[in-house]
Image (cartoon, rainbow, N blue to C red; front, top):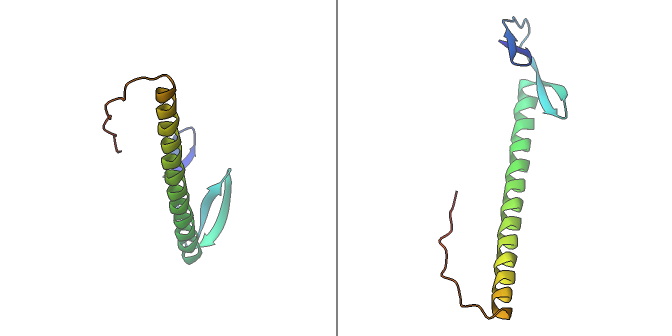
Length: 90
């Protein structure tokens, strides 16, 4: 089945499967051999894993800054310490 767009599909026959087109983003497709496609996919996965790790570290840093600012505000306003709220991990 081939996606024609707008979730419309049709049956298709591919005469030569030695080369495939891979969506590389922004609507662009690149023709690869199977080994080239697998190599590209591996590199893309590694890049995405690095980005996930970077974003996770950024999130932890931002959460830390937010807690520090909240504690500073609490002290300035002389409010009693809050009970720790259990964190939700997804």
